[in-house]
Image 1 (cartoon, rainbow, N blue to C red):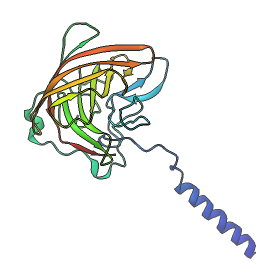
Image 2 (image 1 turned 135 degrees about the vertical axis):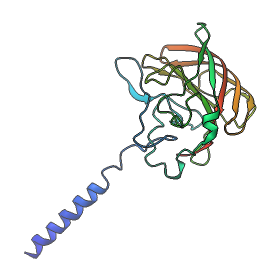
Image 3 (image 1 turned 90 degrees about the horizontal axis):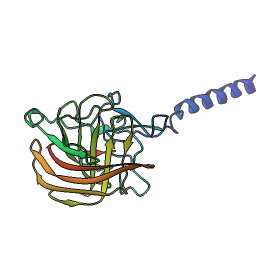
Image 4 (image 1 turned 180 degrees about the vertical axis):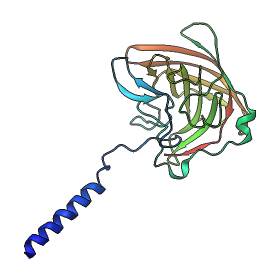
Length: 239
């Protein structure tokens, strides 16, 4: 009888331990992002036939060297972000109007005036924006410039990650993310990249400059060039 009770106790403890560890193998969410339940501009990171799920608002999925942004994951899931929740931009967000002028593949000049669905601070800013980011209190860090053609899901859009950018200057290492509006997100840390920041205002003021880059994925590439006049959102530090 004692032996049966002991076996029952061991079995019960084992089940409790297994349940407690059930999520241990789940990948940790990659920040920065909004609430865990935030709606994302989800795009298939590949061709229309499949591929890894991704979100255009991709700020911190890192390659093995942690020096460049890869094309792996979403930033909108920040369920374990802790104190890294976005800072309230307050009246600055309401008074600032940003835009991105862009030419894709030598096509016509486009004037984009929308933030991207699911992007960090999208619930505070309605126009393109930029902000400094620092992941895990160290590297990588830099400047993100992001904007979309519209606020609709799967909208055409761009996100420029200028590595180590802290203000006015020329930055030639980074990742040019481009959403083609048809379900594909291109761009990685080894793609041709040039961002020149000419104005770097305080929070709520403008960040201005120019860019020229090529976003690639497998055998597909798009050339991107233009200028940005975006609202500076609060700096982000988090996972």
